[in-house]
Length: 399
Image (cartoon, rainbow, N blue to C red; front, side):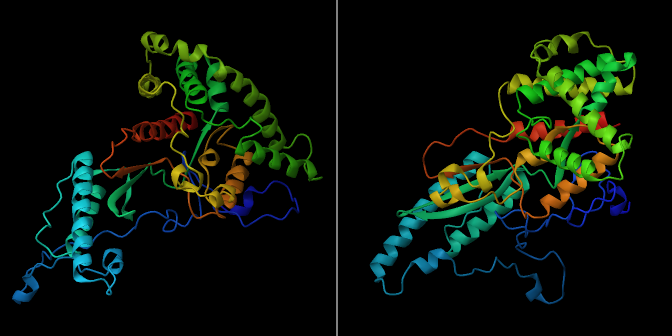
C-alpha cells in the first residue's frame, strides 16, 4: 500500500517519511536496523572446528582448532613482569576460570570440552568458544557471556534476554467491546475479558487512555492534526474513529479494571462450552492465561526491564542522568483502540517513524554471575509465555 495514502487530510505539519503499512496482527516495526538492534553479544556464529568435505589432499582432512587471537589475558601479562609473577598470575587465572566454568556448566546443564592440556591462554579461548556454542544451541534466551577479570578474580557473567523481534504487541479492545454486545460471542468475550483484566491489573500492560502512556500521546497528536485541518468536517471517518477510541476506550478500561473478572476467571473456564472453532481458540488461550496467572499472580511484564538495557548494579551516576537510548517496552506493548481504519494506519506510521530514531529495543533481560556465590533462580519463563499469549490474543481479536 502506498505509504502516503493513509495521511489524514492535508495537514502541513512537518512529519518524517512514513514506513510501509504493516499488515500482520502483531505488527512489525519497520526500518529498525536488525543488525545493530542489540549491543550485547555477537550475531556471528562460531566457525566450525573442522571440515566435512572429502578431498584427495590429506591436508584438507586435517582438523583445525579455532585460531587464537591475542586477548585481554595475554595483554594483561606485562612483558616486564618476571617469570615467577607471570606463572602465578597464569595459575590464578586458570584456577578461577575453571571454577567459574564448572559452576556455569552445572547451572545450564552443559558439557564443556576438556581444554586443560592446551597451553595458556589458548585453553581459555577454546573453552569460551565451546561454551558459547553450547549455550546458543540449548538456551533460547541466551544472549551473551563475558569473562571478567576484576580485583584479581576471573569469572563468567551470563546475560539472558527475551527476544521480542521488532514487533508491536498492541491489543485492540474495540473488537472485544463488539463481542460483548454480540449474543452469540458473549461467553467467549467474557473469557477474553478475564484475560485482559489479568493482563491489565496483574501483568501491568499499559492502557492507551492513561495519560502517562505512550499511545495516549500518539492519539492526542492525531487528534490535534485533525482538528487543525480545515478540510476535515465533523462527519469525517477519522473524527468518528477517534471519538470511538476515546469513548469505548474509557468504558473498556472500567470493565477490565474490575477485579471480579480475575476472581471469576476459573469459574468461567469451568462452565464454558465451545460451540465453534473460534470458541475453542478463546478457551485454549484463556486456559494458558489462567495457568500463567496461577504461576505468576503478581508478576509485571516490566520486572526484568532495565534502563537502557543496563542492569541496576552496572549503572553509573552518569547513566542515571542520560536520556533513554532504546525503545522502552511500554512503547511497543499496550492495549489500544482498533487495528482497522485510518486512525490505526496513521498511528502505526507515527510509531514506526518514532522508533526509527533508535537502534535498539529494551527487552526483558537478566544477568547471572558465576564467581562461586549463590546463583539466583530467576528466569524469563514468565516473559516467554506472556509474549506468546499477547500474539495469540491480538490474533483472536483482530480476526
